Length: 201
View 1 (cartoon, rainbow, N blue to C red):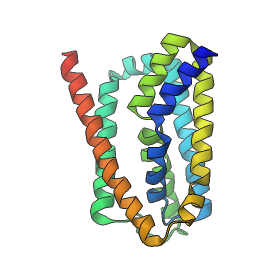
View 2: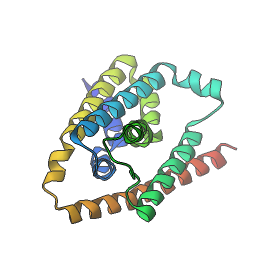
View 3: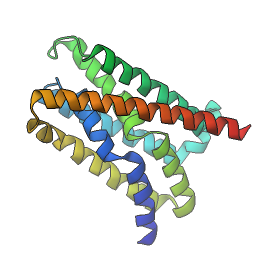
View 4: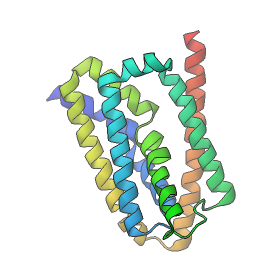
């Protein structure tokens, strides 16, 4: 049981559900309930798929692509930085009617990037999965991954209920603050990646 707990906790901290929640509310502020459900399912499915791939073939994939976790930190940080600046500067990036097909495609893209990757499964979570696999084996790491993804799904599924209790002005303010923190997180990811690259030289 100790191995399962010690495998679960680092991944739970790395995923950072309290940090994802306000960002999710900001990203889905103008979406319909059906779009939110589709987005949530797509994001969790994407995050789970990437996690399983990393768990069973992470080192092989990294070796074949010639990349490291530090490369992921910088790449993911740049994606988040562009998104946060766009949201802070230009406001709502969903400029089309949510009922139009093009908007549904945009929602699907948001479910994959940045929500699935790198917000849910980012460099910290990937590192946690790799370290846990080496320390505790495949079974405890797989169980901790499944439990964490289930908690992510529940949190995002019930996130709109939390948003209903917030006035529109407060909701927009939360979205802006979340974008600001997202920018800070992205800079931290880029800095950690660059420092890691320099240290590896």
